[in-house]
Image 1 (cartoon, one colour):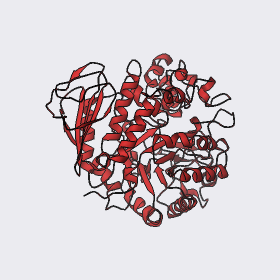
Image 2: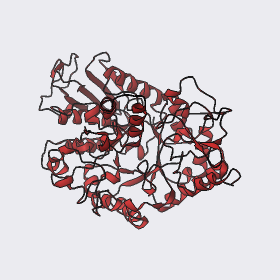
Image 3: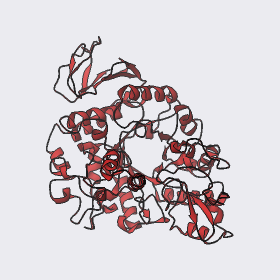
Image 4: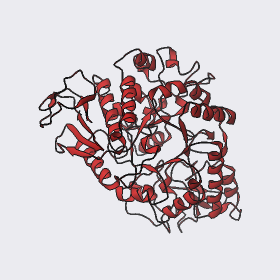
Length: 542
């Protein structure tokens, strides 16, 4: 039987604080803004808040370029505000995890400034420096996430430094034990303050391919992660730090299979508790139901009873779920409820990204100047340099722009949706007058109350957390359907993931079942029922 743990039964709410609630009028959300909305978060029923990075940073990549791990950036307020937030979260019987960004730092971090100052500086080896090839070109042909090369030339020392992301985000050299010890020291600092764990940013990128050889397909970038040595680092991190605290860890782990994933989160591995894989959010542009079913089944079979997965369909890096995987027009409410149901009933820990619970949508800004996402802007400029038309490139990049999920939280229909009294750091989604928290709380059939009910049911019935997974109608192109069962509790989830009606062509006796969740007014009977567009039903037998 699977081990029962508090974090396995948790529901996590992600707060992208700079877009959550501004208390100063400077147009950027802040940590005090999170404090002010804690009662709202608590009312949803979630257990854990995940806070995106708030450390001192030049903010080239929205806080993922850290220049001081021990201080709070001015935009977020200060350390006293963070400590107050942590105290208030705990008062409400919730937990708080924070982003751990240790694959790279900012190029403005004192460590890198020292490293860059000379070839013989004691911190030179804290980062990855290589000589040019004989012709002066980069050490290899690797591509970074954000730029055509992982290498940037430094005129002063006449070497290249390595960066998996932006030029301003040099990678730390994890082969250096001094670097690792400094990171562990920093982790203890925050854990001793009382935080409840870490979401570990691209944690599987710490180990690099030995020798840094050229690769045949540089565009794939999968060579950046899951390299030999990574598990030695994570086991050491566990031994030195994590095992001494009752904490929840979730690793952001791209390019991973279930078999590899188990090496990170297997209950016998002493590394991490859980992971995010990205087979859905990175590899599916829009909903591909046969593939989605296949991914869910494969990860269940690879992990169940041995390691813990996560369920999410959007976050600060991925377009809002109702726009990308549902229908954000005529069936916005229905498809938002359906997709939320999948996240909370499939095996794994569910994550709610701020605004998801009211059905916030992606954006369709008119010009590239309206976008802030450094990854999108770099890709746009790269394509323009190839001679392509700007309008064509913009349309191509819009759907997957990270700014789709970064527009400010929509609290009410006042100017700027009640997010700020100033000018928002990024443009508002213009639909805030129709889609906002106030409207949701005034509507008893809103997405918010559906989520609230769903989360309360998850806490009531263990089958949501520990149940097995038995898919049926696996070849149906539009209906997703599965049973889950645990110690006398049995769930049946039926979802029509289509803009068309579909018949549930399957015989199942629901006379003894309770219709637990549904996004249309329907009868209890299910066999051979006609399902409405984006209809979902969840039945429970006890």
